[in-house]
Image 1 (cartoon, one colour):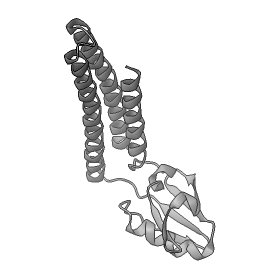
Image 2 (cartoon, helix red, strand yellow; image 1 turned 60 degrees about the vertical axis):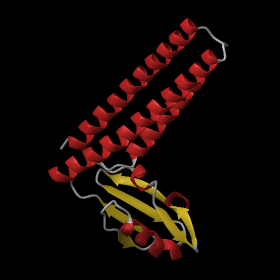
Image 3 (cartoon, helix red, strand yellow; image 1 turned 90 degrees about the horizontal axis):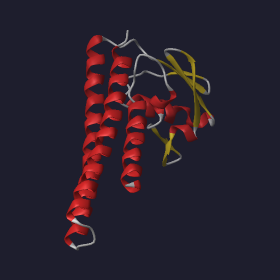
Image 4 (tube, one colour; image 1 turned 180 degrees about the vertical axis):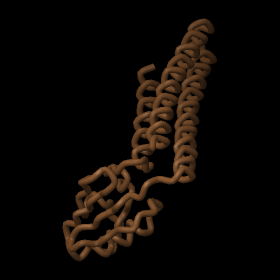
Length: 180
């Protein structure tokens, strides 16, 4: 049971980090966490070549450590799926986040629901693995049929708890995106 809790907790943490990269109405440094920069021929995470701050609600400031990497960082931001045009200012880059349109908000909600559904599938896979393991123990006569049924019920109850957590996270993220 501790293994199933740990695996399901990791799924919820992964969901939270994935949802952090989806843009809402305000600026967040997590938006740029997945951007990779071509830095001297190697793909490097943006946070290793620059620092990202939020000076205003709708603006990100990327301060590049090495002036020669400014163009690479700018290009990486342009080709990302964020849809933001960077404004270079010396060794820093300003990213003004435009207001979200109603259509874009609905697209983001669809994207969030897709990510949440992937997490639900992952939780169900954890349940399936545990139930298969319980059945194996039952088949090998390591546990009784009643104990196997109890453990299967416990696994289902644990799954239900984590599904409620995910539903709560989904509701919070949807309201955050749809809030004008």
